[in-house]
Length: 242
Image (cartoon, rainbow, N blue to C red; front, side, top):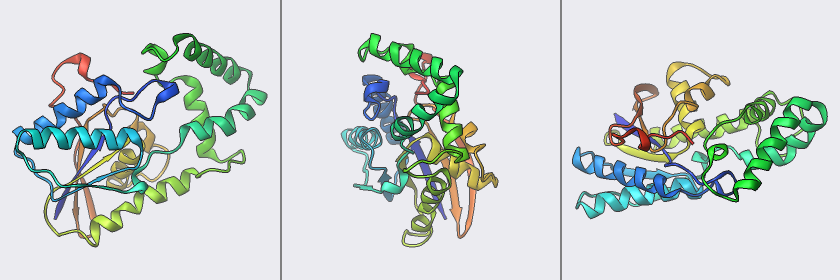
């Protein structure tokens, strides 16, 4: 039996540099590492997606544990834990939606103007999931427009296939930690709850940065034991969503 800790990355950068951690994101990650050490939680294996924000979170957690003389395994990179490519989806589908949906076009142009005006400063537009984001992702999920990148169904299958590695080559016991993003965690929670459609994004949407979710894998049975835990983020200003 393995307990799998799925860790969402710390707070990311601004929309124009999202695939990195903010200073707060680094702090959140260090606090998680300190919490694991204080609680005596040890891991036999550690994995991270290949995205910068995922790897940076993993590195901060590991460094905090080692600094406190709490052992932590080397981190193996597993690209299947990557988040879907929102930037690519915007590049291909936003022009199509702008041409057919005046409301989306107005929302999208307003968002882009605010991003340009802030010039990378940490303003509200970078920390909110906006209506144009929701419209875009729902369009991608529906598959009603051609898209050259990964489809929603392929994304779900990719993330779900990580279960094979956990269930095959790994030891039957011992904690495993995975540093990933919101949607992959939502998909795994959905697997445990027998939710296999876009509703998993509702689970993903409430996840705090640097939160952990515990899954228990026993043979082929996957159970959800805790979700979106943030005991290490004990002040409101430390608890963020984007």
